[in-house]
Length: 163
Image (cartoon, rainbow, N blue to C red; front, side, top):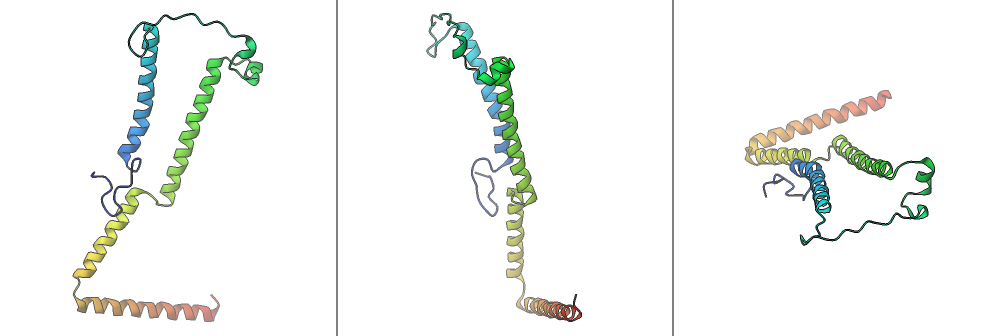
């Protein structure tokens, strides 16, 4: 419950560094664990209930019924190599898309930390404004109005000079 409580509130799974770490470490480890469990289960000849299952040798498929595409067959690439290439392409593509989206959020400053910091700064300034005595507030407003008038005067002069 302690996530992202300043300003915007909790924004859901995937919005914190801890969530990103779970995704980057947990998913591959989970996949590896499932793969290892399936290998052990297959080596022991076990079904999901833990009983031994008779394993029959699979008949070799006819060449035209293999899963390889004609292009892969023409190139002479083994199934395992083609499978690894497809998996690598998918993983690198997903990493590339995620990295690009992250860089975009950094460049546009559309990140949780930046939003929280902005909300905090705004809350602090609002609190200071509320606690400020009215005489000091009136003096500050007069100073801001005078500065605004000076800026307008400079703009008018620059316009007359053609700048």
